[in-house]
Amino acid sequence: MAYKIITDEFGGKVIQTGDTFIPLSAGNMDYQAVLDSINTDGADAWDDTVATYDDIPEDLRTAAESKKFNQQLAAYRVAVARLAQYIVADGRAEATEMQPTGEQVFNEETMEMEDVMMEVIVQTDIEPVEPTVTRMVYSEDDPEAEPTEETIENPLITTDVAERAEAQATVDATPQPVKDAV
Image 1: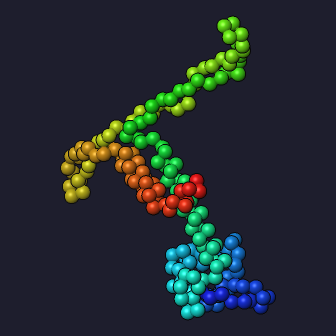
Image 2: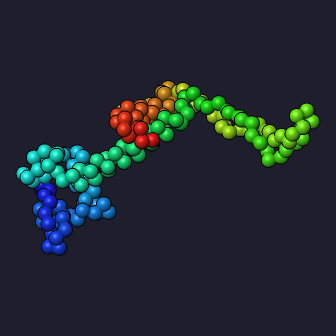
């Protein structure tokens, strides 16, 4: 079905598709679907009065572009956060820093009060996972056969690598204006 903008009985603008009338309201699920359609299909989902993307009413184009920008921004933030996590195959080293305890002592050399500092762990050590795991393989053809052992890459590493690749692909595909907004 094609979308078209019409004036309703109260003088307001609505989107019509078949027998359905969609209010221009951000809280309306069907309106959000129209914005998605603008972002994916452009002018193709509209009636014959809309031949190009520029023929779509400006307020709808702006709303669709804003929605797409916000979706890209959210996806980018999730991807960057995922890439910031440690690599499970490598583990993570402990990190410490000196922090004030809230207590002060008098330094007789400088004749000033100084903060008492204490070394604090700010990032715990995480051991790398084993690179491979062994699993038992049972024959589907012969239920009486003895199982054999098979060594495979650790599934935690496999999952981590796949998630990182997906996150990197999202970062790489994110337009520069979206990245700049962060």
